[in-house]
Length: 317
Image (tube, rainbow, N blue to C red; front, side):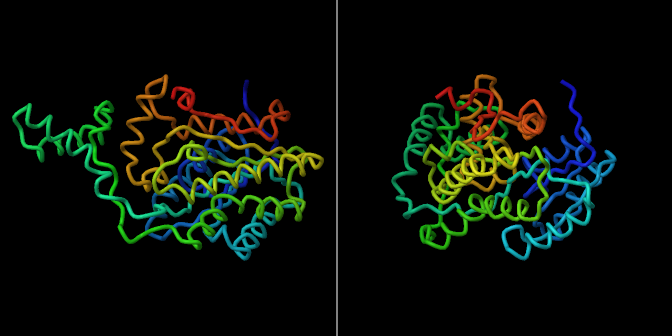
C-alpha cells in the first residue's frame, strides 16, 4: 500500500524531538503529512534537534516546532494558537500523538544491599575457576553486555544502584501520572474545543510492557501508562461520534533516550534481544511505520485498542 495523505492534514506530536515522536514525524512527512512538533529541550540540545527538523522541512510539507511546556495550560494554549495560525482555515489535525517521556524513576522503598549480591557472588565463583580477578571479569562482562555482544551474560551484571534516600512521594506520582498519562485528555479536549480535529482523526498514545510487569523504580511510570490507556479508551468511546479514533501502541524495548534514563537499561536491552523471536530490539522506525498505517483511511475501524508493536517480544515470555 502506498501511503499518501491529504494536503490539509497535520500530525500534532507531543514529545517529537526524539524517540518515537521524532521517528513518526519523519515518517509522516516523507509521505506528505504536515507536522507540528511540541517539545521541551534545552538550548544545548537544539543543534542536533534542529538538524532533524531541517530534514523534515526538506520534504516540503508544512512544519511547525514549538519549544515549550506541553504540560501547562499556558503551554498548550501557546502551542495550539501557533498551530491554528500555521494551519490556516483549511488545515486539520489528523493525528494527535502523545509521546511525552517525563516521569520519576524512584523506587517505593530503599533497596536492600543483599538484593545486589547474587551477580557478584556468581562472578566471584566464575573468576576463581578461570584464574582471573573478579574485578577484571566484572569489567569484561559489563563491557560485552553494554556493546550488545553477550546478551547471555546479562544476568551476571550488577543490578542498578539507587540512592538509598530517594523514594517515591505523592508529588512524584502525581506529576508523572499527569505528564505521561492524563495530559492526553487535556490535549484532546483542547484540540476538540477549538474544532481542530479532522473529520476522521486519530489519537495515539505510547505505552510499554511496564503497564503489566513490575520493574523496580517504575511504579510511577507504570501508573501513568495504565492511566494513559484508560484515557485512550474513554476518548475512543466518547469522541467516536465526532470521528475521532483513539488507540494505544505498546512498543517493545527500544533504544531511545527515555529508555537510557531507566536504571539497568543495558540489562533490559540484553534480555529483550534474547526474548524477541527476531533476536533484536524494536526500533523507532518499526513503531513509526505502524503509526503511519493507523493514520490511513483503511485503519478507520481500529478504535479503543492496545496494539503491541514488538516483533513478538511480549508473547515470548
